[in-house]
Image 1 (cartoon, one colour):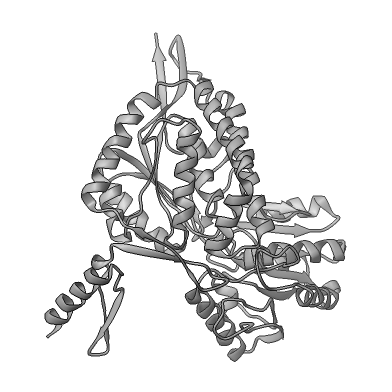
Image 2 (tube, rainbow, N blue to C red; image 1 turned 90 degrees about the vertical axis):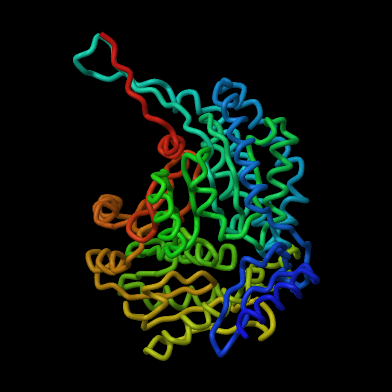
Length: 490
């Protein structure tokens, strides 16, 4: 009977050209992803379908990877200045098409238009940064040894495979692709299923800017083909931005085939405010950090750890700012926050909030969807949060702030480190000497003092613990997928 059901569903699927994802047989889920050959993107603000995208077959993927490798053999011999000129053209196109590209981002994943435009501008800045600085970043380095001459040079390796998320559908692709390609590698992208239009648009931009065909390829593939891509002889490494669960899976496959990997995973960033901090600035910055992109940001304030002397004032100001945020149409200029990207994300956030409240957390404001059938979620504030609660120990990927009191700076550091994640952290105080001492003790890939956690082309980005390993951006990021080659001469 089970086999008959599978065959029947496969037949129905082929006729409708739609994917059958899960079928319940005898109350058990039977996953049929192998039958999916088409993915449909949906506007989270309107819940209307945007476009159908066919998925590539394994044979098509194999062909594209071969072409990508053939292109690499020429691309690696191009000069850094030649590559830089192409990236400058790409920066020009990004700014020229900013309005339409920003609208595409907003329509596919829901962030407000102003944030989408800022994302495109940041990508253009990244292009210009690496076009200007790659030559100096990859200069050979003289080494002291027993040789007459000894130096280290940085050589490309081949094709890098990227599995990228939906929350910054341009920036996170560019963040991985630009340093990789400027260093002489080629690039293939597997984008998230809800932003396939962004993946196609990025591919078109590379072609229009004059990049060699197949130096950047966009692979619309099912997740089941991931291992075959990683295993392909042309692929030298894999980079992923996503959940810890996805990171563990990709790292295991990469290890199986001895492929280098870089993982940028989730975060539960502490935002520490000491008694002497400027309260209004720290609070407004914290709210901006937490509610950016409807709270769907890896490196952002998630756990607000506030010294006792300013705790009550901080809670009240935070509540006031949250309740003044305008939620609605992400294309409207007066909107502060649009919808979340998908219903499963909304449901997961609700579950984390409700479980935490049942364990003793206090709901100060928000906590619910704006409308039961929609993806808009109220900006939410919880207090009386303890480490065993989901909103403390798990990443909350949505507009939820939790505020935790700390006795003093030492206690704040202890609370900050009481997490399995270690992406970013922020400290607010006028005592810079104390802040630097605290930064040394905080377990995170980056600590920002009197500033919001963020990514920046000039500085390395990445985490420790369950937040991943490896670095993107800056001088460290560009060397992740290079052969650091020693040349010894006597």
